[in-house]
Image 1 (tube, rainbow, N blue to C red):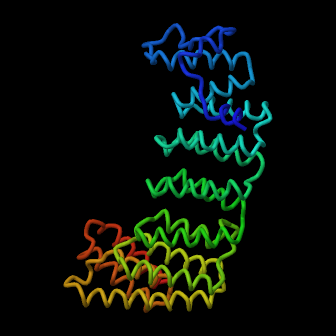
Image 2 (image 1 turned 90 degrees about the vertical axis):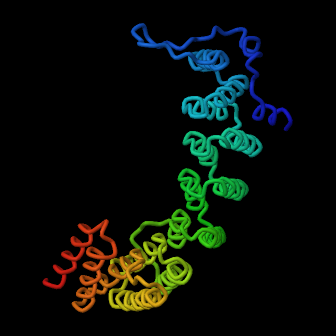
Image 3 (image 1 turned 180 degrees about the vertical axis):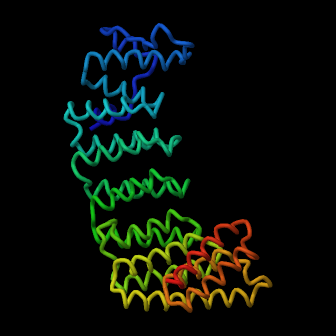
Length: 344
């Protein structure tokens, strides 16, 4: 156990490279004879990679080669070839399926990933380690906690979210889905404008699947109500919650039972309309909240009857001429679209 920990935790010190690889000739980088300028790599970097190229050339799969990959990855965590060769070494040494070895390598990736939270190679290495044997529950829990820590530092880290979604889909455990819904809801509560958290809620409620099957009507109503009560009514300027509401309802119109979907849209159009009326009572400028009005326009368009479309045209023209003149051309275009719907 201690030998394995030393194998994965330690790297070969630069000053020991010549001794450890005394039987090998370093292979300098070949930049070609017609190079315009020579990149002046630091001495330690050049030495480590000279030995790494010699290892690649000889195709040596050994403990010292594995340690050298860690040394080189520390010097340049973005070098895909180094990480790939490390995984080849793990496999050849019989460590790719060893739980202790995987745990140690995940720890190494975390140590190198700390200063490089958006390094694709490090995130892929974590996934590749788990893909080899399937995502076991032990590592699933550990990884979700690790990602949670990363997201505390940067709630919009795309790599972290993508990896988190992959884990949830790979395990596909109902208890984990429920826990993830609580996690996404907590992030929304902490920062209602965290569009990544809203996206994660969508992902979770659909169980990650994009198979054309919409939510049940009860599920859709719960999600639409959540968007209004926990999102739009709290911050009507927040586009994330408005987009979430519209997407939930539009999915029902496209894929659900049409008559029930229409009733659901009407129900939530009324709620948004009431929110806008309440906004008007507390603000001198009723059109000040452009986002809320835009959402109302979209809902009226979803309803599709002439009366609703006429109201939407009037609102769009008001946006164009008074409330959102920076996007005048867009709102005139929307008004024309809506008018065409009336004329059809």
